[in-house]
Amino acid sequence: GLQVYQGSLPPLDVPSGLRAQATAGGRVVLSWDPVDEAAGYQLYRSGPQPSSEWEPVGDRIPVATRIDVPPVEGEYLYTVASLRIVGLAEAESAPSEPVSAVSDATPPSAPTG
Image 1 (cartoon, one colour):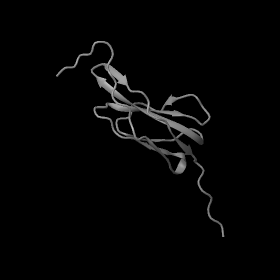
Image 2 (cartoon, helix red, strand yellow):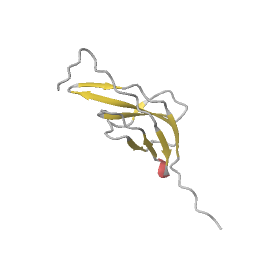
Image 3 (tube, one colour):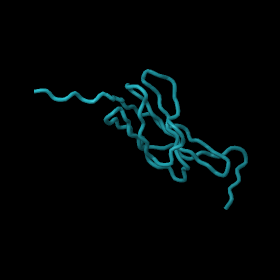
Image 4 (cartoon, helix red, strand yellow):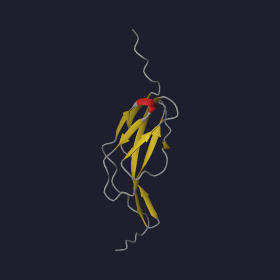
C-alpha cells in the first residue's frame, strides 16, 4: 500500500557491527550488518586523526560493504548511517559508533639476505 507520512519520515535503525579492516595499498575494507528495508547507506570518514571533521565517503552505498582508499595515509575514523527512502521522502539514521583503521599505502620492503 501507499504510505503517506505527515511531516518527516521516521528513520530506520542505526547500522550495527561496523568493521574496518586495513588492507594492502592503503585500502580500508568496511562492512556492517544490513538494516531491514534500508534503501542504502551513507558512510562517513574523519581523518587523518586528530580531526573533528566528518565527510561523506562517496554517494549512497546500496550494499553493506565498501572499500575506501583515503587520500593520505594515517588513522581514520568511520561511521555509517542507514537511509530510508519512501517516494520522494528520505530519512537518514543517526550514525553508528565510530571505528578506526590505519591506512598505510607503503608496501612492505622486500626481505633482505
